[in-house]
Length: 334
Image (cartoon, rainbow, N blue to C red; front, side, top):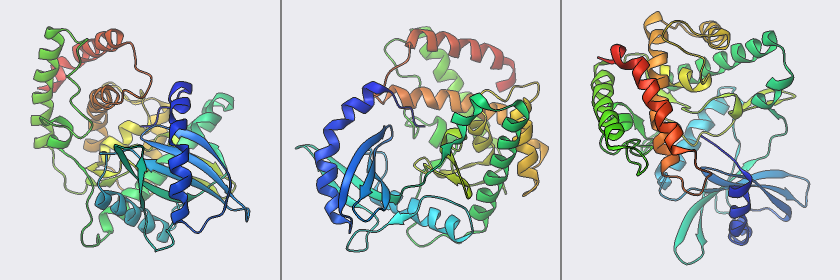
């Protein structure tokens, strides 16, 4: 769920010394490096003296264990072997996927190196594209999501594979994966009480949903900001949120604001049409996508609430908008 801003990028410069030291674990002679993102991870572009280019990431501490990070690499390797363009892992000199990095006296992170990919972020192209071209982009995105779901369902995962689980507990438990969305000092007591009550209702609904054929490893953050359009085609990035989850959640994330209880907009329709060219998709799953849009909204509150290094929203405005959203959903949740 990457959100970059000038303040966070400037603040992340404090990591550069540690990043340069950590890069010694890889067989790379660094010519230059520059910060490109400070979100879930601190990411640098690294140019090597031999002309090769890389993305070097310092992973957010406490977000994933080493076993979860290594499992992410196993999944992207599986996708790559199956023909999808995904991040290419560069192992350390000792053949490991990650190296341990000390940031000052009290912070530890895992660092990983990927091949750099040139291209344009799909989302950044939309301002200059026609409606028809945007629909075509979402159609292609739907095909990509279908391929990921198919490959995930058919894959025999290696021993020790572990990623978060976005089920009733993962989304709406007492300690949800992205943090408690109801826990903010600027929320009024009445708002907190309503969010807690809604959490319980959504938890029960998630528990009642069938997972048969519609629950697997998902990207969980595959929106147009995480697709790079290259000369060779679409390249999928940022598998940091990859988890076991409902397929409908991937659709809700892919087209933010594109799903209503009445009908999907043209982008969402194009996404579904593209998906159905690759994989069967039943109407029951499509009908669930607006519900998962609500889930996404709530879990995003928890995500940003516990990310103080990022620019924070106007919490009172967000609370008002969230209460208005719950007003619209009130009769549909039970």
